[in-house]
Length: 246
Image (tube, rainbow, N blue to C red; front, side):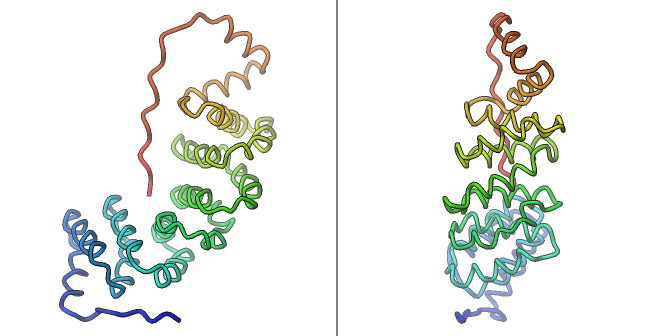
């Protein structure tokens, strides 16, 4: 076991702990920045606990950054415990911190339950982390798991899943071809839209979804014929990039 030095109980630790839980989010942000700028393993527990309850996105991201500044041999085991937390924010932020640390050994901790978590934010974060950590020989199995989530949630959730799948590369194509024939139109449209994005990453997600719906409605041959017959119109505005959820 790696010993963890602690500054708990010192006046400095007490001041920082109070600042990290202050009512003003700007005070909490500055406190997290200060801890990360002068890494001290004694703050590990405080940082992890704050991640689980911090309501502000920017403060949470700074807390994760502060954790990445600590030695991974003490940080990773503590974060792993948070993956089993009953608190959704704790699970989501633990996964987010793993993505920031980028230690490939953490791939073994990403379970099917995380990828299918009932909370959309936890699931979205798990998808991103899984894609970042998966070894080459695990990509096909990961694709098979991710495609079970096609059609899930609102636009942002579906966009997150599509981006995760596209980041896996050409290995996703066979699974998407099967999913594109799913009797559930939401699943089929999502699969087709994801394949369109794989072929043209610059295409907007909404445009890809609409094209996928048209293909499902008309059939591939009629949709292609209709597209050729349509006069060229003004170029559509590109999608505004979505903000990264934490």
